[in-house]
Image (cartoon, rainbow, N blue to C red; front, side, top):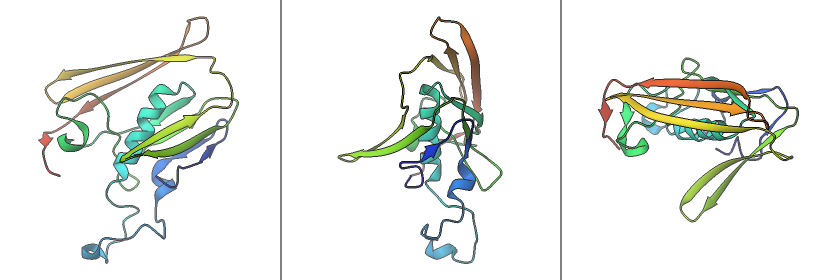
Length: 172
């Protein structure tokens, strides 16, 4: 998450999350896996998920590509399937978000006691708004949609994602 702390996303530019965090020199390899040369390791999906959630509530962030996990990790994301994960793996499962606004967007992490929060900061009053709808559509499937409206209430654009999982995974 340190790579996104005070990150400035300029107008009409993208964050290709996989590329942003790939091969960071300070991102230590696991001792049991020193021979592998993965682009990144575990726990990165938690950060990509936070960025995805932020993109849903910020009407100036447009999600260009997002993938869910193949399994539903219950201990991290809840037993009920809401929509909420954004899985990344090497350069196969990508997460890409774009600033579709005329001004830059800043990202900031904030730790309050034991909890870590992630926000986007817009340097001007918001002129549009988004409505998020989410629901479980089947035992291992869910849908989330975001309708973004202008200040007069006219629909500007809609995005939606369907997540399908092979099973629920209770591992920690």
